[in-house]
Length: 125
Image 1 (cartoon, one colour):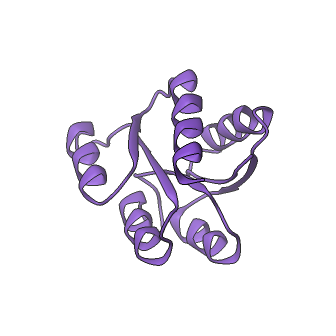
Image 2 (image 1 turned 45 degrees about the vertical axis):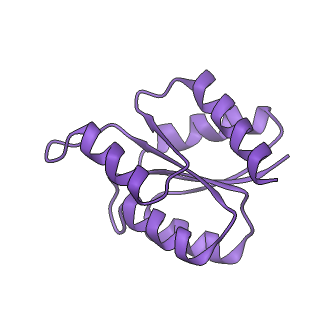
Image 3 (image 1 turned 90 degrees about the vertical axis):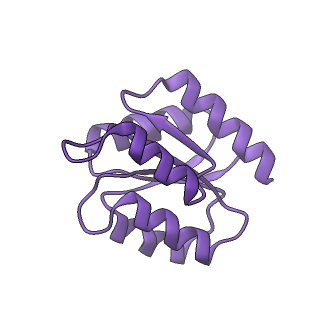
């Protein structure tokens, strides 16, 4: 199906998303932060990247911006739960303006995540 990269500093989120998408037949790699994620993106060819926004090293908005500059034709889903300093709506708007294909809120609705992944893989294939 698709090669997917999941970038999130929460190991539980990475693990659950990887399991869910692997069951659907996708090949899934994971990264613990934006810096590691961009390194992997430069070494492999991904159809889709799922990235959190609030992370150490490089945040998800920086990752989104770098991916949009470097890789045309890659689908990007941004996930966020907000932060104490910035509310979810502001982060959602920023990610949309910066070119995210979709922005999903944590706690993730896994049926919505699956359908969004499938829709974007189809669109970018």
